[in-house]
Length: 397
Ligand code: PSV
Ligand code: MN
Image 1 (spheres, helix red, strand yellow):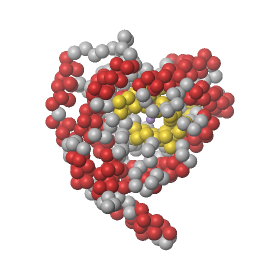
Image 2 (cartoon, helix red, strand yellow):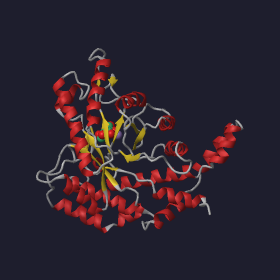
Image 3 (cartoon, helix red, strand yellow):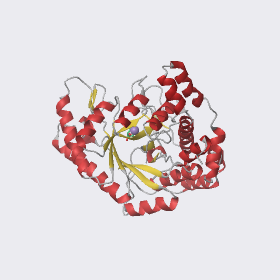
Image 4 (tube, protein in one colour):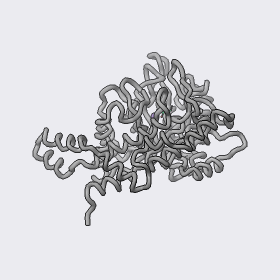
């Protein structure tokens, strides 16, 4: 017997893993200041504990992405210990994110720099991250470059591009065979005149030069105001070069707010394309990751809410009557076709989501459950009263 629409949604939700960013659990701020959160995670172990809390409550976040060197283990600890700790907590290590932006040498770029020594350092770091990915069993190395220039004439645009491709190709060659290379773009910042990977086109072209396992990473906060992200998603999926997402929401620039908080309709439309470009029943099997750093909102709560928002958008997109939509499109019925999407978007999926959670033995309301969670409370109290283990340091540590 075929599944009912509700059963289809419940099954699909069970199979959408959403990866959490380690850096979203540590103290973060804006360039104007940071507001420390009492009991916040201070090292890689505590970030793993917090990510595991989100998974315990939602059943949807089995992996945590790491940023290197922010998440380097304390001296004397090796990666196998970290992997085992994560396993004991009920999660696994996800994407490895090289940091090619905070060292003083990267002032004028990393793999694009005109200075060969800087480029060598950047490539060595890409190789180090490839090695870590192999040890911890991660499936992706996700590269974002802060490389760019501030003034016309500061550097040669094409020369920088050639250096970048050479460097990224070297990093790719060091990857274990089953690891993908995700190449993220961002419109601007910190470069204000040029950015070496500023849009999906520049990332895609570079991926095509690098190799089959190089794919584009779409960070939803990295576009110009008004960009149609679902169009980008549809195109990249069609080209088999969509590697995954960094979900977050924004109003102005790279605001890193809770995904689905500013523009939930866009998130729904993105999922609609992810289902359309797959089998019409489930979202394409790409990497679904959150990339958010919460400044004023409680961090674990913000992550749980983000997961719920992603699931809400996905559930609504799963309810789109695709046969009816195709018919309306073929009949050139503009508003009839649009109404099919609106009908799905306006459906109240809360009861369905609650059932889906209960079916996997998770609380129907994970946010309410978090507020009552004794283990979280205990851990926070303990962190306030004991010193942190040393770690990689830097932002998010
Ligand atoms: C850059 O803004 C970015 O989106 C990249 O994914 C980084 O790795 C991440 O944020 C953390 O700074
Ligand atoms: Mn990102």
